[in-house]
Length: 461
Image (tube, rainbow, N blue to C red; front, side, top):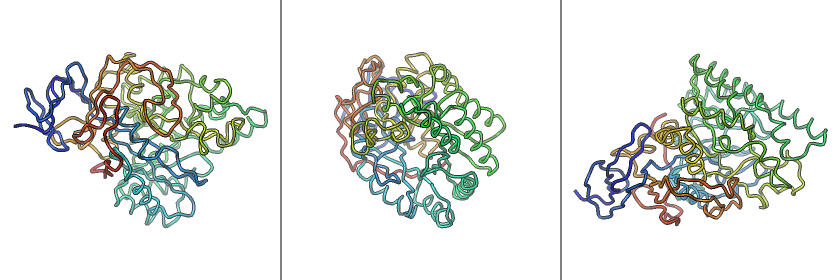
């Protein structure tokens, strides 16, 4: 048999195995894994790792905010960055801004996604719990293929009370949707921000000291307790430190159905980056904030043992200088007025590979599990996505583990004007990326056009 494409002699890496073989692709899917396969096009992967395309389960792309702004990284640009970094599927967020029906916002976001170059799934944010949202909206969104719901325990325009959170949990349980949670204590943070500003603390580093880890830990414990009461699954987003991870481990030990993710910036950056001169510290404002070096270094064991099962980017499409970006209120704005979030779609895999695999913290199979297989399972996309097996989509990344690259923002060809990793030297880089059997990136060029991505509905949860 002659396949459309054969990837020959690569070291195939899945979440459980490593072996040398050929991959035969027919159309959009993997047909056969074997030896001495023949194809109309043959790609020699000798010396390369062949891994499932990355799945980034936490991306803010072209997302509308309550103040009317829209994240500046749109689907066309953000998905190009994703591909250049080896990510072939994303899960992103439909808003729930005041005055608009939740189903209408889901459908509007689905239309925006038609400009994506990569396949995409949708989390639906829930910011209020009126009868229409709970009784009609959530069941309808589940029917239309949402990958899950997201709720916030902080932020003025987003946070839910404990009672509201329980109503969302009950509705999600009835509709079979996982609930992901941003865990920080809203009232305590408001208190801390007011105290900082009263004391004249307006600098970027005050963002970190106004949101200490104990407030993330408390909110995480509370979210898991409410999920335990409701008897439903939750996922804790962007765990920033070992204290929170240990709280999750204890909950799992007593039987709470909770999973967790972290992000590369919590594994590689620290709160000292917020102290950079001038307005530069604003580039590193995200929530939860960056923690100490000891916190950073203490996160790795929780990735190895599966307490933290996913590494996502939490890509947040704010520019540094743009009209909706970090400097929207001026370069002398206090920390509480600076939009929270950092870009990371393109850098997620290279930074994690270098820090984790090259750093001896995780193995290659761990890398695939954390960046592809586990998010595919969590969001109901497995085995169509997230693995290398006959019948799976031919989303593949050919990775050169020896290639050294100095990260610069222009490598990722997006709308965002900075990367927090500017000038960082990493070893390990994607050389060819395939999306559903077609070459999407080669020689640093994006070959996949906007509109070629598809909305993907979860098949299971």
